[in-house]
Each structure stands twice: as structure tokens, then as C-alpha cells.
Amino acid sequence: MQRRNRRSGVEDRWHRVGDGDPCTNAGHGKLGTLVESANHGKGKRWRARYVDTAGKEHAKAFDRKVDAAKWLDDITSTIVTGTYVAPGAGAVSVGVIHSQWLKTQAHVKDSTKAARASAWSVHVKEAWEAVSVADVQKSDVKAWVNDLTEKGCAAATIENALGVLRMVLGLAVENKRIPHNPCEGVKAPKRQHSARAYLTHQQVGELATAVARDGLVIRFLAYTGLRYGEMAALKVSSFDMLRRRVNIRESVTEVSGKLVWSTPKGHERRSVPFPKFLAEDLAARMEGKGREDLVFSAPAGGVLRIATFRTRILNPAVAMLRALDDDGNPTTDWPRPTLHDLRHTAASLAISAGANVKAVQTMLGHKSAALTLDTYADLFPDDLEAVADAFDAAVEALAKTTADGLRTEGEPAS
Image (cartoon, rainbow, N blue to C red; front, side, top):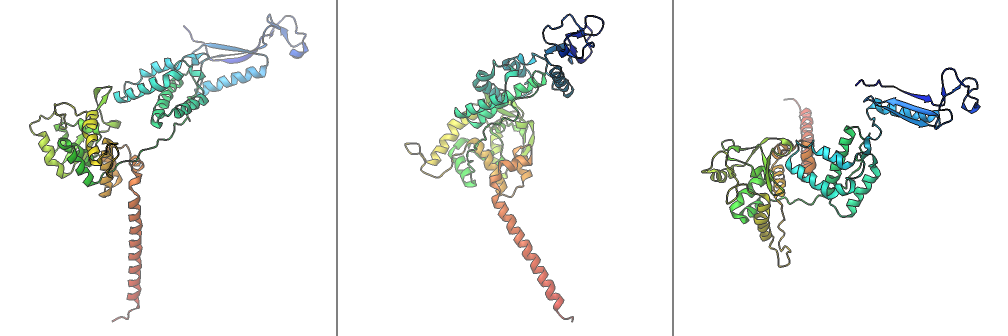
């Protein structure tokens, strides 16, 4: 089928070119210059027409020529700028676009898919599934975010829900169903980060002792900065014992009760050093195992699951160190670390030992040094004081050198 050429224009439905009865209505134009058409006086006088990028013709009638021309100019502008949306294209619902969007997520990790699926089913679906994408207004999205906030949803939860809706409507924009994404510019509440439990060297040792059999897990996490899933996925072949390096190639997480193996966060592989004092215990863990066997495995074999380790091993040990009373209140000032706090501890201990930002970034697998600085900005104030002290020492040394030079110049030649 031959496509129609792209064209546009405004025509007078009441009058035509050629012979015929002259128009006698002075309100229509100069008398003697207009010829009545078969539609004279019927319906709206002006019709604007255009052929879209797909070769389909669209038309709309107006009472005034100026209104028809403006409408046509606006349509032409959207075609030129690439924001054109065909009439009726936005009538499809958010739910339909969501179904299409799901088919574009093959590259996403299962853990991320699960988080997004939860956000959709719990917070997005009820509010937006049946709404036409063309009817989603930015003000409505802002009101929805505000409603979630008033309901007490955490900032991270709202951020995830808004992110899902933004991505779904982003696909609607790509498919030319709406000209712009109404979620753009809408912000979720700022996250209120809980205080991190940075452990000292002594506290790492105390916690490792308290968890008994799995003390090596605590010390390994606290002195390498690996994520728990990265540690749980380590095999004997991951270690270079001569160079004291561990190669991070994969991670294992628990999604809806199932173990999912994938690449590390950000798909970044890296090599991380481990301290010499861990080498002997690591070697003992690997003794008798094959190259593809897990180093940190559960007592009965298999993956050391994070939920099990947290509830059965870490939490009881922390409770013991905090010496909880009958009401569950701590009787000591011992901190309450999470497993992820051991990663923060590694960063803290590395920075206090003099490691530069680039080294800490590499150890933790951050995408950029800026991310490392943003994440651990609270660990650098003492370094600023050291910088000031260094400035003092430099200026004092310069003053002393200048004074010595002046005294030398003033002495008589021998």
C-alpha cells in the first residue's frame, strides 16, 4: 500500500474555486470573490488537515481560520521536534504499557526485578494501572507521592515506586504515546540514612569471637569490604593465596526464597587484597576442598544464606555483646552493627590507616571516587585537621629557612 505524502493545510469548507453561485454574505469575505460550495453554511467553516509520519491523514474543524492555523502549526512543530503523538495514541492504559515494559527488562538482575515487581504490585498498580497514559498529569504524580509519604512509606520505598512509574511512562514516550514523561521533575522524599556502626579493630575481634565458628566471616568482611553476597559466592579458585588477593567475579543473593547467582553489583569485577593475618584461617577453610567448592559454606554444605546468618549467628552475638536486659535494652555501649556495617567498617579502618580515596573505591567496587567520597564523607574531618597542621609545618619551615638565609647574609666574610 502506497503511503501518502506528508502535507498539511487549512481549507475553507464553505467556499470553493471555480464557477458557481457567488457568496452574498459580506461577513465571509469580499463580495464577488467567493463561490459557495455544497457545504456552505453547514458545520464549521475551516478545516485543518495533515498527514502524519505514518502516512495517515488527520483533520479537525474550526470556526476561525486563525485557530485552525495555530492548531496546525502546533502539530507541525511536534513532528519536526520528534514529540508528535498521534490522536488517540495516549488512550492506552498504564497497565498495558507496564506489561510491554516488563518485556524490556531481560538485562536486569533477578533481585532488581523482584524489588520492582513488589513496588508495582504494592504501591503503583492500584493507583495507576487503569489510567490512560495521556491522562497522567505531573500534579497527580506529585499528589500520589505525597499520599505515600503521609501513609508512612519509607523514602526508599517511595523512590522505588516512583522509579517504576517513571520507567513505564518513559516507554510510553519512546513509543510516541505521550510527548513528555509526567514523572520528570517529581522528587521522592530525601532518604534519612541511619547512623552507621563503624567498628574498631577491637570490636571486630570481639564480634568474631562471639560468633564462634563463623568468626572468620566477620573478620573477612570487616577487612576486605566485600558485600555479603560477594563473600558467600567465593570459591577456592577465587583466591590467589601467594599474592593475598581475592577475585570478585560473581555474587549470590536470595530472591523470594531462591538463590540467584549473578555478577557483582554494577557488573564490575575486581581484585581485593586481604591482610596477612587472615591467610592461615582462609587456608584452613579451603583444606580438602576442590577449586569450585565454596569457601564460606553452611554447616550442612551449600550457600551460607544471609537471612540465616543474620538471624541465627550475627544478631544473637550482637545481643550478647550489648548485654540486653529483660526488656531488651542494652546495658553496654557496644554498637549494633548490621552485616552491611562490616563493609562500612572496612572503609573506616582503611581510611584511618591512610588509604587514599582511589584505593578505597577499588576495594569496595564503587563506580567512582566521587561515590566513595559522598558515602564516607563523615570519615574525613580528621584528615582536614591534618591538612591544616601540614600547612602550619610548611609555613614554619619556610619562615625558618628565610631567617637562616638572612643571618647568613649578615655575617662578615672570613
